[in-house]
Amino acid sequence: MSEIPAAADHAVAVRPKDLRFWLMLLSLCMALFLSALEFTGVATALPTIAADLHGEGFVWVGSAYALASSAILPMTGALAQTFGRRHSFLASIALFTIGSAICGAAKNMGMLIGARTIQGLGGGGIMSLTTIIIGDMVPLHERGLYAGVCFGFTWSLGAAIGAVVGGSLANIGQWRWLFYLNLPLCGLSGGLAVVLLNLPTPPGTWRNKLSQMDWIGNFLVIAATCSITIALTFGGINFPWSSVHILAPLVIGLVGLIFFIVYDAIWAQYPLVPFSILANRTSFSGQNFITPMTMVAIIYYLPVYFQACKDADPISSAVRSFGFALVGPASIVGGVSVKILKRYRPQLWIAWALQIIGSGLLTTLKVDTSTAATVGFCLLYGAGAGIIYSVAIFPVQAPLPVTQTAHPLAFYSFMRVFAGVWGVTIGGAILQNGLLHRLPEEFLNQFPGGVAIAYSVIPQIRDLPQPLKHEVQIAFAESLSVVWKVLVGLSGLGLVSSWLMRGLPLHTVTDKEWDPSKEVSQS
Image 1 (cartoon, rainbow, N blue to C red):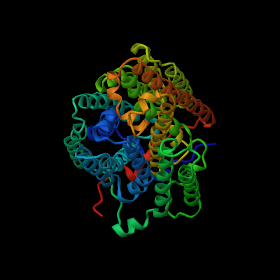
Image 2 (image 1 turned 180 degrees about the vertical axis):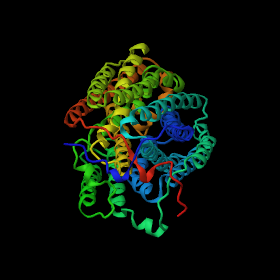
Image 3 (image 1 turned 135 degrees about the horizontal axis):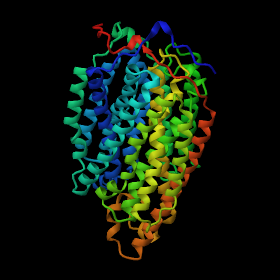
């Protein structure tokens, strides 16, 4: 396939990077940092939170956030295109702030899950709008470096600090401050955005803009993602996988996604996902789904290994997960390599190999595996995931004209976040089902809620008498090994999918319609 023309009448040459450019990038990085900080902080503190709130629906604390994020993401492209990047970005920060405040004040698991849903709407918007705005600021052939800094380095730094902060606060019983700390940071990020993001706003009345939204498409994708997540969350735990309670929402959700694609391709006047993305094998690459799925699963369930099998407290488990910090430097290396070589496929092939090896080594984790070995395994996986994180954006946009930025990048973000839903829920389902069959009956009988409550008392495992304690730890290690094995298979599938994409030239211009140097419209 030859490169799609860059639509010369809409193209603008690259301008020098002035102070305003770097300040705009700073405001975007700060908002993304908050999202990453929250994500890993909650994952690390989750056992303590579940025990404190006496909740059996612990999986929903992560899934609700990921579900809300994925449901809103396809809409963010249309919101950015219709209402402008600036207003949409500020609304996302506002939602994240409100959700954080309610999370901190949560009195029960239901309230926390509801607040995490609001937080997820804001977090999804932050991720998507950051990607779109950087796409407006930087041409594709340079974008790897900035994507590596903003998404790879900033995200991994926030994730690493979030894990330590979450673990520290959980360790002293103050997990609520994990959410309250967001409030001043959100205020600072929002203030910077108000001052610095002087971005173009499309003209037109609100009524006209609302009429340009694909409401039917939005309803279909939200309903479908919710239905699938419900099935994945309750399958094998509350109901057998063969139960109609699981099969019905799963089938309805999958059919709904297919109908959404067909509707947007044939009938939608303002489609959420333009057909040019779905019809192109390079743009519609499975690797944008698989890496986030495996990475989120590891982020959520590696702390479980440390806390259940190694007697680690939340802060210690966060420190032992620092191998993932290599995601940041690796993403920058990946982005720079694309800028220099003008190619993206070889980097993806190498990255997938590293990810397969790293996740494969995780399958060998036992109760007595050394911390040094575990950190080394995480370093290998993190190197591969980091490269993919910054390089995967190129096959998405290389076949498309520069005028198609918002919708493809919103869909790109949707694929990543929806993958997180699958990562959390599939990992949780495998873990819970494994524990159901491996935990000693003596241990299970102590908790009327079964395995879900057993998971919520992970901080108490260290106080169990022997040999019960060792048996429980072995059950966790063996159940988690199944999770890691599934991730190896998924990574192999990602490698295969990368063989199908084509190597294409990269755009050297941006779309003048969204040039950040333009004056802001007051319409």
